[in-house]
Length: 580
Image (cartoon, one colour):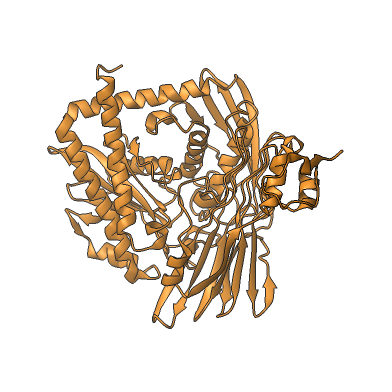
């Protein structure tokens, strides 16, 4: 252990966290695209100069980027060492989105800046932002039926976008020549750069205050304590092997479900994850690159043990066997556009399913587990310019031993939230007719699942193409310990008054949309937790009064028979009688 005193350690820990938080806020406040500015689909962090390991990440960043940005920084350092990338100089910023080099999907574009202090490379500052388009077959980059990564968009290895403080016009021109709405990219690029510069300024101030030796000592100590705390949490799990599984609806090309199977072994104080038994590599874009698969395990464990601090030490007790031969270890040229937004959440769901038995007071039933990726791209004649609208949506969280699941929560992989519909209507030629709670979608349980949402959106003018890469359309989020599954995702397109449901339920692309056509989506509800018949009748009555369930559903799902008098909000529990 270090001889640094606990108070100084805590202050430095909070200071490093604050550097990342300020980068996150700068990124969102400066970005042009609603998916970053409003939905906060981004993350920032500090990484070790030599190893690339995570030192700190902002609390406001997407958890799924915790592992992927570490893998990406490690890969960048490796490329520099073996001559595949130019060595860093002060003022440089690298750009990379290659999913096979520690990434996710192509839309998640990562910047990395070497941070120097007193002439020494102290660390890397890195961030990731979801660009609303990266080229490829469909607007928005979510190609639901791609069979090769080239169909998904522009793929960039680590190259210097900024050299000694000046943006490289040739690299920027290549990017703009391969993506839609290229004229709008500069706003997000400058925001991403500004976030790194703010981080450099704040980190410099922290080092000026405490000195480089003290900061390095604190980082080492903090890393050791994170590993220690994670092992203390793992000690709550009895030694043994636990199995969980989850299913992806389809890969978008072959209409068959994909199985995620995980065995988690607790031994010698650590956890060992083995995904043997999962489906083989698939034809469509539901393959997951290794960095995303590992990061999905990390975020699942962070959900289970949220008070463990995040840095590289957090991952030390988590050992993940390379899932080679499965669709969870994508290699070039497998398409991967659905890996971070959808497959990652099924991986987390499988981990939850495996650990709910040994940790019933901590682990929840399955959440909605879909980012609800909906892209609408076309031309707006009123504004005389093309557009790409990217919409994400929330769903229900799973119930747990303590309380019912959260309604309209963000996806499992992060804190990204639905953009305000008023902002979307201002930016794009659309009108939302509905955005409402999806009654009955929460799975029944002693603690019921939270509810998803319904939304309907109409194209007002011009022409457009709609694409969907969602999940949980075939089966809903799984209940736990006797709880029922939540309702599955539902997508319907109304064109010329005719109803169209995608063949793959939650995945499709290039759907031609004309003015007056409507897209309707119902997001999944969370799984229920525990035997529904143990739910107190007064809570079932309250749910029915609020319109969450009908009287018939209360009887069928919870075994509760209600009288017809439901007018009194605080009426006696005798209005609800447990059925035989």
